[in-house]
Image (cartoon, rainbow, N blue to C red; front, side, top):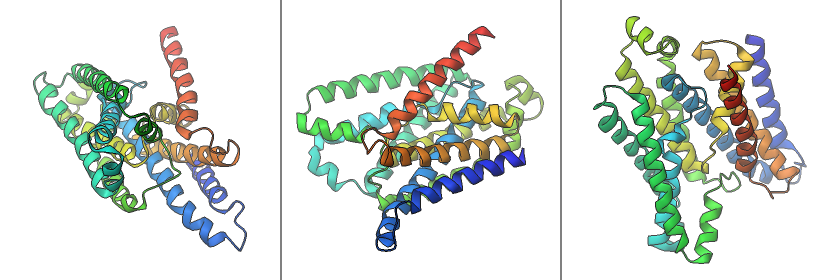
Amino acid sequence: MRKKLLLLTLLLLVGTGIFLFHDASSGISAYALSRRIPKVTALILTGFSIASASLIFQTVSENRILTPSVLGLDSLYVFIQTALLFFGGATLQEKSSGSGEFLFSVLLMGLFSVLLLRTVLKKVQGNLYRMLLVGIVLGTLLRSASSYLQAILDPNEFLILQGQLFASFNNINTRVLTLAAGLILLCLFIISRHVQELDVLSLGRDNAVNLGVAYPVLVQRMLLLSAVLIGVSTALVGPITFLGILVTNLARELLKTYRHRILLWGSMLISAAALVLGQFLVEQVFNFNTPISVMINFVGGLYFIFLLIRENRL
């Protein structure tokens, strides 16, 4: 198992090295690195964030084909961007494209998740599926509101919006990169303190309660951390829906373990390596004609269908 983790680490390091130093001759190496280092940092941070959020969310929900997107966070991000452009125009959105908008987006996603946890989970005494249902309904409502606003947007502003609704690593806002890194590392540190409880939680709610896990408290804490991680990655680069399903299930198939300390590292390494190598293909093979989110969602969507078919056969 350690050999597999070392191989995944080596894959990430090799992919990072290729991404940073390809075609970097001595004359342009300084400029090339100044552009590529922030980009590869954002790729790794996003990979770590999405993988860890998806893994703990699947453990809490006891379902391997769910991601935090079912809480409606992606739909909320789309609505925030659409409303900001609709009511403020392109000029206001450009002025607020720094840390202010980043914190505003993350704060709204966090508050949205807290409201779900406080108003739904508390009333139904930990009924997670009721919360998921409410999240899906609210996500559908936000998507409908976004579609309505987009339909009456100015065509030029709509084109600007479309470019923002696809995950992109081409123009990383370096002003928020440090802030995003701090939030992600803080969440990962808190998660690392609960990995043993997550191992027990994977046995199911009843077994976890019988073994002394404070189930409602742990579930709310993990869901909140998952929402913050997804909120940070989405506000940083945009929504990537199927990446979490893909990397967490690949980590489980590869590592063959229930221990979250190992699964967490494995899924984060796979996720970061996939993003780094995928972005390299986008730039060098597809010449920026295909966003990386489209590639990942295509592969992840196929894998999602495969998981559904396999579950039905079992």
